[in-house]
Amino acid sequence: MDSPAISFRPARTGAAAGHRGFFHEAAFHSSPTELLAIVLPFLLAGVAAGEPTVVVFGDERAALIRDALPADAKVAFLPAATLYSRPASSIRTFRSMLARHFGAGAGQIRVAGEVPSSTFGPAWESWARYESAINHALDDFPLWSMCVYDRLRTPAHVLADVTRTHPHAAAPGGHHLAHPAYLPPASFLPMARARPHTGEPLPAPHTELHDPSPAEARRAVRAADGGRLPADTLDDLAVAVSETVTNAHRHGTPPIVVRVWALPDRTTVSVTDAGRGPADPFAGLLPAGDGARGGLGLWVTHQCCDAVTERHGPDGYTVTMTMNAARPPSHR
View (cartoon, rainbow, N blue to C red):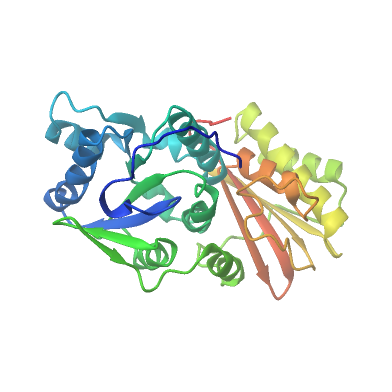
């Protein structure tokens, strides 16, 4: 995670002045007026300071912010549907963008963004891990990020996770507070992996395999899918399942059980072994090149799939991979 050095950089501004690394805060609102009261001063101060200033919202909110900004404001608008397609891909994309700005001499980069409400369903488990992991993954850079959540649209359990994964909170009037409920990634990520599943219950699986080889698991996924997924999407899922089964054989504890659900809108596959899973709390969201369990293979799995959850429970360690029939924009 080395970052380029430069002889002189402007001092950081605003609430992040004097802060080293990533200043990560949440911003809660209940109306468009409250949203603008929080976000506009943040963006305009960044523009005035000559800092790279970026907005990552869906079309409706992006248009609201764009219309409220001065016509000549140097603010970059990036599509939320693309940048927030998959957690591991989002980390990779943001690190690349931040490295470019940092390499060009930026003393601070400001980003205001909002993850799509589609992430609040079964995929939220992955995005909660993302919100926690970026406290470490983006800490190489002088980033000030404002993650915006609508209180009226966001479920209570998501809001609770937001307070646990953001060290700071922004409020109208330029106020910036510490979140007393914040947990560092080393505490939050293992807790998230161990908590009970809260998503919708699944029916009986279409296929269940015991101690399959990676090739047998790939064939079972292709047979069960029955043409629901486009060919390239099914290929990605087959790669992810193969990597996960290989990891279970190499690093896990038998028995290994693979279950496949071919649902009308998605295909889901779980791989369970009787072990405890990777010790690295960032496994999957960041590539591991040190031989740690899951290492690069689990990271590849997160890159390939629309949603990946990891859970340690009474029956062992389970990785669940999902591909949607309507595939979001790829980051690969």
